Length: 455
Image (tube, rainbow, N blue to C red; front, top):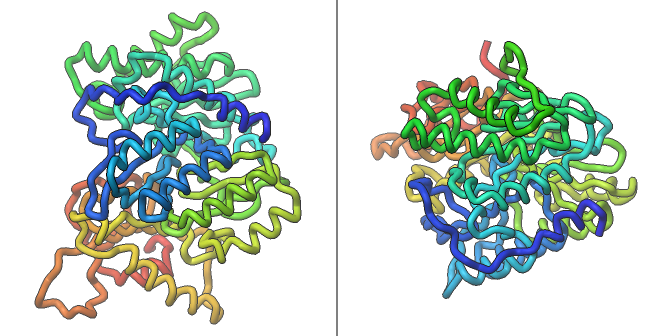
């Protein structure tokens, strides 16, 4: 096992004491399971997307023996197991996860939401690896009792300087501006500049300042943007950080920052590869195969908010074989693949709120597009993403410009073969959960095959 994997493996679990519930936040976790139509659902937090090969094996075993045999990656790079069933399934799952260090804190397990640039330290861009910073932030977060009051939706970000974490809209983000210094952002706006070595503790201090400001105002928002006066909270955060860290300084006249895309599927740098899971899910056998490949590299399996997996430290031969084998494993290694950029919610039968088996519909239409592409159809990595939802909640939607397709209510008078079963639109930014259906009625297959923004 590599040195970076050792950093993560050293995190020992606490005794299995249930976490106290301090809010109405119903976000699922590894201990608080969600009851779905297809069984119980567990969401395992993976700070920075960093898993050891042994942890991947444990997750795969849990999916295979307790769940439906599949593992999903969420839009924050966390891992979900669905279809959990059986006697004492919650206890069996928690013991299995704790044994591999996947539950280092029972009181904080749902608040360990940390995203990090997936290519940091792998391709010569940015200002180096974020593995140690992720580990230190996770430890500081879990060792601070006050941060147990954070919502399971509150998000921390670590950006190596290239800006690929900014579009994910973390509540608090540290963006490196040099090998030795970083800027602390509240949302997209940098408010404090400080030495990079102080980033983990500064982010935790900022989170505590958010909680204090929220409670003092008598509010209950889960995220900074939910509060009535987020600008005042940002000022309180900047004040708290600069008062605690002598070398931290406010940024004069801060301006919101823009970001860049997460890496496309395929090779990264000289020895890494980025492989996207089709519709964000893959069977346990695929994850086991990736764990085996990781052992031939740096020992880590990196899950990403793009619902992909990055392996690094690979020899040229191992990487070449992995790229060749990707399709057989159900993974996307080519940005021209028609399935790249297509996401979907759970849909029927796993979700009672859904109106359609959206995943089956997407798979069927992609099969037709694959056949067309094989016959010479055009493809482009510049296509807009597509997200398909079974209802207006739009679970798992992207936060940047994309096509959305939302299942329409069933109409007995409408022909079963009607291709306008989905309402469609181009959404600039984040879809509004619960918003009315969009006005468009393009066939789903049309969106999947030609995804440029209309003129």
